[in-house]
Image 1 (cartoon, chains in turn green, orange):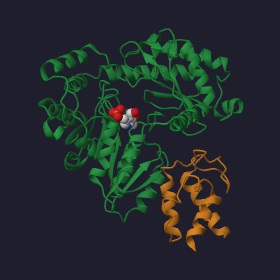
Image 2 (cartoon, protein in one colour):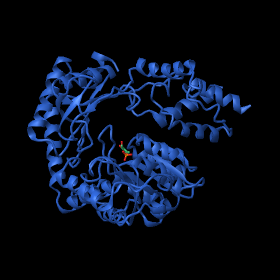
Image 3 (cartoon, rainbow over the protein chains, first blue to last red):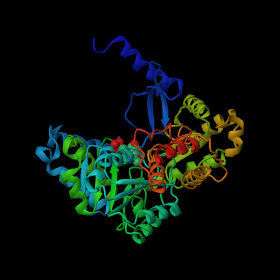
Image 4 (cartoon, rainbow over the protein chains, first blue to last red):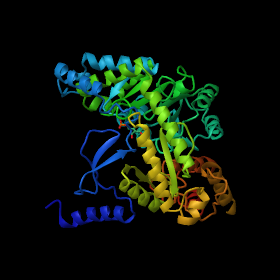
Length: 415
Length: 81
Ligand SMILES: Cc1ncc(COP(=O)(O)O)c(C=O)c1O
């Protein structure tokens, strides 16, 4: 037998090692549509609990919005369920082109290419446009999918300290001998909620003749006055060369992603990006619904405005309650706990209080920087937010961490 | 040979340490502690290769071999001769 008992045991031991390190990911099942209030089976087999969801990327509350659902139904009726083809053979419908045009207009870019996911967009974009005589200079905390894409590309790569513009400048100086320089950053960093200093980066890019790619997965639809993203927030819509983003978070939450930007760069992706060439076309259902999402967001800023209000309310409440949060303006609010076990224990107690949040620790975040990440949504009502703050206060009190700064928490619990 | 040690330590502090209060010595674990992720390790490798005019094969550039300043110095010395 090729899958012998010995082999089975070896793989089982790898799983045990993950468990021993406390890094094993438990299964959790959601019995309801994605929303502010969900029904959860956790642990597996336990009875279902109605809890408030504070860990979805459903920033605009569009994942189960009636208009979006209706558009998906209409897409299904009018264009069918699947394409059974990659884009360039027979997988591109008129609506795929429509969505690309709408995304270009929404983001203020010259052209857009759809991918099965943003992970795929990030996996394909670098290899399609850069070669060995080029260099990629990336923030150290960029998303894993960007790291993977950069690894697939023959360009040299280098990194700079997280959001450290002095260090970036040094690296740009160091690489002046290269043909193309490409700066890579997340628009909003998903673990910290940090907004990258894109204005300063664009100035540096100009000074040192570099291009900029921003992954705006945690910004598209809600950062900036009309939700176009981090480039709108800083008033530099024309300075960014490439944006990658996902439809799997604020923009409806199903799946799909894109590369948007200078038309030659997008065209090179169309010709060469492997996940575009070798993976199936987005389902018409998703395409039709995402078009509706972009239409809704182009018409009114109501949802991103509500998200902004909710974010302010939560950030104010949680700070007053005495928890240690990273300051910022985005709806990603990390409650810093530093110690992995503390993050895990507190998230379990939060669940018992009816609040669904997750602890994050190494290797997802740096060692000694464990946290519970809270994500706000336009689907939350004031009473949801107040209940979440109250639960944090109660659980924080139980662990004696209210009012403590990093030093205080680390003294009590270790890193 | 102490010289290489100091050069590497200075580079590591300059390049990777984000918090001023953090103390890094010749024996501080860099990668296994999460201070340097394996992705960022490439800039260290490139620096060493340039500085000492050597070429470190990928087989030698393991996270274990790069885990402390002392072990990094060992790699540099091995390839310098
Ligand atoms: C910054 C960033 N980029 C890309 C992705 C991947 O997006 P998708 O789910 O579309 O593959 C994510 C999602 O986790 C992300 O946070």
